[in-house]
Image 1 (cartoon, rainbow, N blue to C red):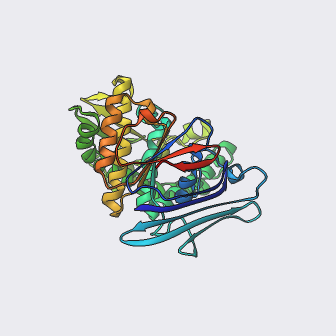
Image 2: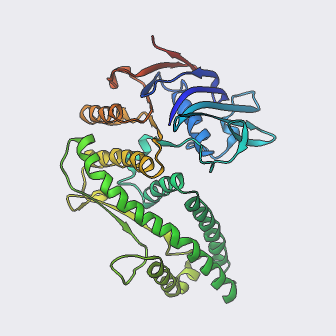
Image 3: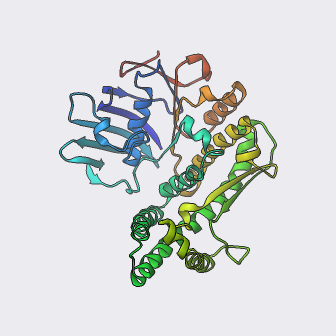
Amino acid sequence: MRLELIQINNFRNLEQVTIRPAAGINLLVGKNAQGKTNFLEALYVLAHGTSFRTVRDSDLVCDQKDTYEIKVVYQKEGRLVQSTLHYASTKGKVLRINNKRSTFSHPDRLRMVLFTPDDLYIVKGSPHLRRSFLDLILCQVSNEYAQYLNNYSKILKKRNLFLKTKHVNQEVEFLTRDMLIENAVPLIMGRINLVEWLEKEIHSLYRKITGGNSKIKLRYALSFTINKDRASRESVSAALRQALDEKQESEMRRGTTLVGPHRDDLNIYIDDRNARTHASQGEQRSLAVVLKAAEMTTIKNIRGIAPIFLLDEVMAELDQTRRTLLLEHLSSSDSQSFLTTVERDVIVTKQAGVFNVTNGKLFEEA
């Protein structure tokens, strides 16, 4: 997947932007608050339908404007595809792919992986960050998983509301519990399978991107106990049902669901040490970089399409050795990437497209 043309109108401070990016690495260089992150955000919104910075679409519109539009033309499997997202304050968002109204589950939609400084906390941060990491990958490779996740979130919210009222009857409790389990099991199994896949990818990537030889292990940590060595749909369903039964009084008392995929975690080990508590800051950052690179290769291997990589001010957070190794990895891959930086000298690479960003305008270096 490779962007050939990008046009952005009235998105934040990007009033009118048109560029033809390089096929490989593209650098966006400029001082803070000039529009570099806004540019990445526009691409992300076009791919995912939501921003990574705000939940309100109205925040994304230029001052004194009522609409924004993002349009790109890209190569996908040897053919050109056009994707356009138009937002109007009175009508909301409309996505069109090849001029036909579409959805963000369309097989020809853009696929992008975002890497921000916040992602450096995947390893040492809260379990929510690691669950979100897994979910974002799975939603990009499986529309079915995305639907189960959406269903589960709605049912969980409703069940927690019932638990808080403390007046739910047994029939309603059994119904919401069964619906919860029905949607929870595919999420858990999808995550377990993904973790096994990621672990295979991460060994060679860790050596390639960090230059280290440490042994990395990934383990999916359930919030309840199963009585089998290897999880299956049947064993997970039975164990979750038993755990919900056992936690019923505690859940009623606390007004929330205490077990399920919303409480699970991803344990990351480096040389048999839990990386969250025992890895150095440098090791944690290296692991975060490798996890995002593994996200790229996983999507490519499962979908057969290399996603576009968006890196927002990440290079400044890494030391020179890790920057160099990551750039070498990006240069040798067949993925297109967009990197933002305040200082041009932080990123040294050949054959890159370079765009200077000033007051919402992009100027390509000759």
